[in-house]
Length: 115
Length: 110
Image (cartoon, rainbow over all chains, first blue to last red; front, top):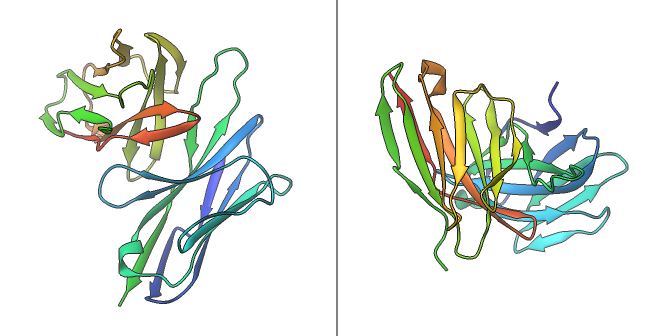
């Protein structure tokens, strides 16, 4: 059973549209939730969320976490073709003693922005 | 500051062979994690090293192993390669809870 579930799996929008990507999780010892953007190879870091209700923003991208309902959303406003990528959600758990920072990833949302 | 580097970038092997992949973390970062990415399974955690010690290991067979050196560089090894080992292998350098990924090594097993 998947611990991190992203939806939708794929999305096609037109330039200028606003999109909302979803990530729900079910882990025992939550530490943080991270969003990454993957275009060709290496996932690039977008946000790290640890507290509920505090929105993180970077340009046209924003994200928020709800620790009670166990989900996060990533919003992209005024989309551009350069936003086309796979967006990955990952959760870090707290492992007592070991101090590990293992990430558990969702399958990703493939976003395609057409002109 | 230079990013995470991985070598080689591409590799083609045949079944039964073994392979070693290398990762150099961002300067000053002491923790390195490895992930396997396939179209079907997505990104899956392999192992994590900190100061030359394996701190955590994912659910992979014993054919997958790794190590970290005193300069924080890390290697992972896969023995007796299988077709299903074809994947993008990503290394991540960790600091402050954030993981910074390298470009990956694309392994193809024929």
